[in-house]
Every structure is written in C-alpha cells, then in structure tokens.
Amino acid sequence: MGGIELRQNLKLSQQLIMTPRLQLAIKMLALNNIELSDMINQEILENPIVDAEEDYGKNKESSQEEDGRVESEEEFKEIAQYLVNYNEQLVDLSKSGGNHKGADNNYIENCIENSFCSGKTLYEHIMEQVRTGCFSEQEILLSEYIAGNLDSRGFLAVSIPDIEEFVSVDIANGSEEDIKEFVSGVLGRIYRLEPVGLASEDVASSLTIQAEYYFGGDDLLKTIINNYLKEAANKNYQKISKETGEHIDAILSSIENLKKLNPHPGMSFGKDEPRYITPDLFLKKKDGKYVVFMNDGYIPEIRVSSYYKKILSGEIVVPQDMKNYVEERFRSALWLIKSIDTRKETILKIAQKIIDKQSDYFDKGSGDLKPLILKDIALELDIHESTVSRATSNKYLSTHIGVLELKSFFTGASYGDSSSKNVMARIKTIIDSEESAGRAFRDNEITDILKRQGIVIARRTIAKYREIMDIPSSSIRSKNIINN
Image (cartoon, rainbow, N blue to C red; front, top):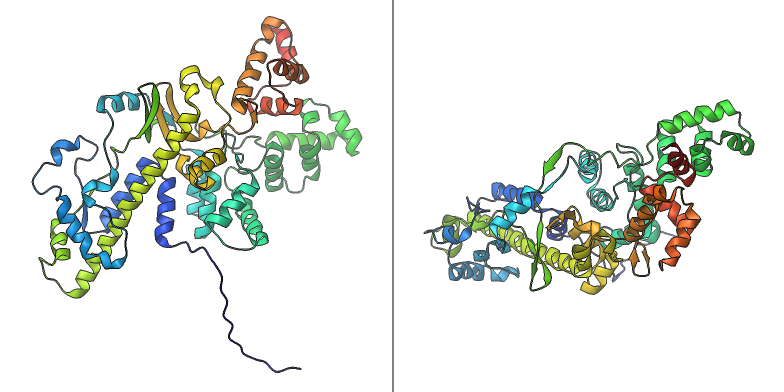
C-alpha cells in the first residue's frame, strides 16, 4: 500500500459570488413600491445617520426650499469625495435616490380611486409559508422566483429548464445534475405547501401530488388521474373498470376521493374582500405615444443628518472608532440610494418596452395582445430573463382601462400574429355564439373556424384552452342548449 502524500495544487477557476449588496439589488428589483417603502423605512430605523423627509409623497417644491432640510449638492460632493478611497461608485444624495415626482397629483388620485385588487395574493401566501419554514437563503430566492411565475390557477408559467437556468445564473454555481436536484427539491417542498399541489405543470400533475399527499394508498386514484380523467368527467366508469380490471365499487370510491381534490389550487386566492392597492406605474398618452412613469410618491426620500455630515467632513471631531462607524453607515446609505435609482431605471425601461410592444391593446382591447414572452424583452434590452421576471413580478400599471399587472402583458404561445390570449378570446366568442346557432361546436369544428380566420391550432390545444377558461365539453354544452 502506497504512503499518503500531501501536495499543494494551484487551480484557476471562475465562480459567481453573490455579495450581500448584489443580493440586496436583486431583492429590491422584485419589490413593489409599497414593499420598497417599508424596506427604506426599516433602513432609516437601523441607520442613525439618515432621516426621511416627513412629508414625502407630497409636492416637494416647497419643502425642499426650507432652511436646513436639504443640503446643497456641493456639500454632498465634498463628503462623497472624502470617501473616494473606498472605491465606491458614489451618487449625489441631493437627488434623494431618484424619487422624482413626475406625476400629476390629480391624475394619480383619480387613478388610485379606481385601483383595487383582492385580498392576500397567491405569491404572498406562498412566501409567508416559505419564510416561516426551514428554507435556506438560496431556497428562499428560488421560491420567490417560482411563486412569482405561477398563473392564476397555481400552475407554473415557466418551464423547468427556465427555472434551472435561473438557478445557474442567479443563485448557485454547480453541475447540471446538482442544479436539477436543487430545483427538484425546492419544487417538491412547494408542492406540499398549503394548498397542496401548487407550482405543478398541469392539472394531472397537481392532482397526482394531492392524491399522493391525501390518499397515498389509493393507487387506483392515481391511475384514474393519469389515464382516465376524461372518462371520469363523463362518468364512463364501465370503461375504466373494463380497462383497469377493477370492480365498479372500487372505482366509485376512488372517484369520491378525486372529487375532494382541487384541480386549480391557486384559484381560491384573489377572490375575497377587495383592498385598495397603489399602482407602481402610470400610463399616459403624450404626442400620440404611450409613456410609462413611476409612481414613487410613496417612497421615502433620504437625507443625511446634518450632525453626522459634520462628523464626516471633520467639522466635529470624534473618536476614530465612531468615525469609522459613521463612514460605514454612510456607505450603506449611498449603496441603498444607488440601488433605488438602478431599480427605478430598470423597471421603467422594461415597462416602456412592454407597452411599446402592446400599444394596440390600449387602443383596441384584449383581443389585440401580441405574442410576447420574457425572452423577447430580455433580448431587446440585452438583459437576463430573470431580471425581466423580477421587474414585472407583483408590479401594477394604472391605465385608462384599469389597473393591470405587468405580467399580464406576456402572452405565452403564439400563432402567427395572434397570442394565446387572443386565441382564447376568439374561442370564447365562437362558443358564445352557439346558442344563436342552436348547437354546440365540437373542438375540431372550432379548429376549422379558426383556420379560416388564419389561425392554425391543434384540436388538443382547443381542449386545453377550454379547460383554462372552465368551459365544458361540447356534449355538456349541447345538453345545456337543449335544456334552455
């Protein structure tokens, strides 16, 4: 047996390090304006050298002229110059973090008057459980991404490869196998949050997860979910019995368990008591073009305390350890302000690009949403898809036709010049016309009608979109027409 030998090896490698400041910038981008306001207020409580303007959210022209309220730009530059050796990219505190009030106050009040959405959102409900559970910091970051990319039914609006790519770029640097295992582990934990079955890819997988969780010993139930959902819906129990070899009583017992499951676990959110929300962005039409601007009237404006400013400039002499502390807190304030400016610039840039792409929607209505996915915006602005996802997650735009979530402008699959939402609107119009026609159209007939309109789409996709819109099959619709 050979002896043990110690060696020193020099290895050169590249690794993405998530510094605390980078994590802060990423976190801030995903916050809406109210959440950002809370975060800034927390920083004001923890950082003794900064204060907030007492009347932020109001007209700042008069308050900024008050003596001693806002220090001159030159004085701030002198303080910033003092810390230049720290290699920080400094900004003017006199700009108050980019909280420019470009909005008309009456316009904002009128928009907010009609702005509301329902109670706790699905995102809030999931993250409340994640943050109180035993999730690591990396798992929380991924959970935020997943929770922000669920549709109204609670299903994933992005693919598993997209999630794995997000992890490899923004969270962890590891082998492909390690990343797949990490994503699978986090998804597995989210599946079992309340309500069970969230973040699955479709109805069948969500029901399978719920069946395993609630009725683990009912293997027949899983077989029905994976192979006989259509037969179960049409009460064709004889066919299920014949093909599975199970007695009809056993099938009826499993069907009873199936009825206790929720095919759309996310649908129970957003339908309770309405609550007012503050839009993050506003839309106005100027010179024939739609322009987006930030509603940052609710974001506190930061200023440096005059006492600590004198310590930094040397006007007040204090012990070195205290001066070191003040310098550290000053750098923290500078970074926060820089991050606020960067966040605002990024969100406005992405929102404006989205509006430019979907401008027809505001003139003609929902049927004119064009095909658009996160990747389209990311490629045009030369940024990562995850940045677009964070910047649009939980952000609301106030327009002349209502308050809309930025994510609602992404339409998923496309069929020529028509988006999936456009196609669904057309399918609904066709089905709404059935009563006047005196009969229900089968899915293949709807396919032919859309084909004559220039939209080529598979019959199974029609069935999928019907399920999303909770429209029953043609046989059930025919019975309803006859009964009416």
